[in-house]
Length: 235
Length: 235
DNA sequence: TCACTATATGCACGGAGCGTCCATATATAG
DNA sequence: CTATATATGGACGCTCCGTGCATATAGTGA
Image (cartoon, rainbow over all chains, first blue to last red; front, side):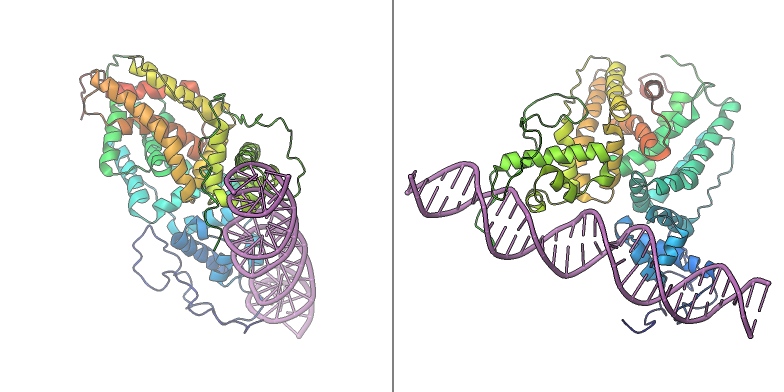
């Protein structure tokens, strides 16, 4: 119904060639030296290449428009791929969104154990606060979590690749500290993490109150005061 | 473009029906003995009646299928009303969902001030835990909050009629306790609420860990231990 | 009693998106 | 060079959105 391949040259809105990705935003692919989508008619392209294009497009769309504007059709258009191809590899919108997000961010998520639980938790918490307030990922994470409430694929992916690792990191730090005798022996690490991270999510997702570093530090002080191994005078 | 003043009568979808059962499941209408929408030809029905039917249908659909199956078209069908009518009163799916939810629940949300901050917070928190774990509203609330991340109407409604009041209730209790000298003078009540409620939401929305009464009580103990007016030995 | 008006009704539209078919083209493996 | 795996455009039927239109009727004021 239209000329074969009118658009494919500057297909990618993403970074690609440029070497100045300020992190936390789509870093996308410089993965292929090849400039860009060659003018192609029909026919097969290497699977890996197509996959990469789709993930790039998904990430770009996701960060540009959020979950609201994120549709399979638009990803397909943006990637210069066909819906058929996308459906061949991803079962649902949620699954693609998750992969798109992680494709673009791929967080390192490593924090050294300094032996000081307060310092360790603070750096983890601050890093998280920074992520959700100072980068484009903040709103997006809220929207992803939001969508996950009605999308099992997305929920599973977030669980496995996002919430799980972060939770484990903090829990590990807490367990180490406890073994070191820095914390009350019968604390429940998961609950501590719920208090710290949950408080932030509460503001992000529910009340909309501002999330600042001061807020985070204050939070941490409160929580630690409640669990450090000192005589407890109540309960 | 249209007749002068068609709408001005019962414009607000809001409150309406009188004080009835608290409950947390659809109480819906016995308001009309009639079981189901009479087969009617065209023509006008009393506005209030139609509105009621729509809200009932919205609530039923919401509780039965969650936000996933909640569409304007289905509400219309279920209510025996026409989409046109719905769009005349509600600007969006989110707005209708919110009204449908509150129509069905209309929580009382009153807690006496007993003078014991621990007891007061515990009853509030337990009531909340009960709501999100033991009633159909739990999953639904998660889904509503989820959708609110990309639906401004819904977000505003939840803010005003759900999160706001609950937050205020707890903050008030904390302020009273502080004035009574039960709490450290420079606590930030909002943060305390973030810790308590946020921890629950964290499990509900993010990690999926179980939310029990024991969890809630433990949470409260931790938090209070951190903020009660006793010598603080750190920070 | 009756005409008038506000309001609900069915119907139908164009648009978007979903998820799934085809038949066709071609890049890579053998 | 052939075979096969795989991407392609295009089209389908479906649901839903949000909005128009002409028509029917309940309630109301004359």
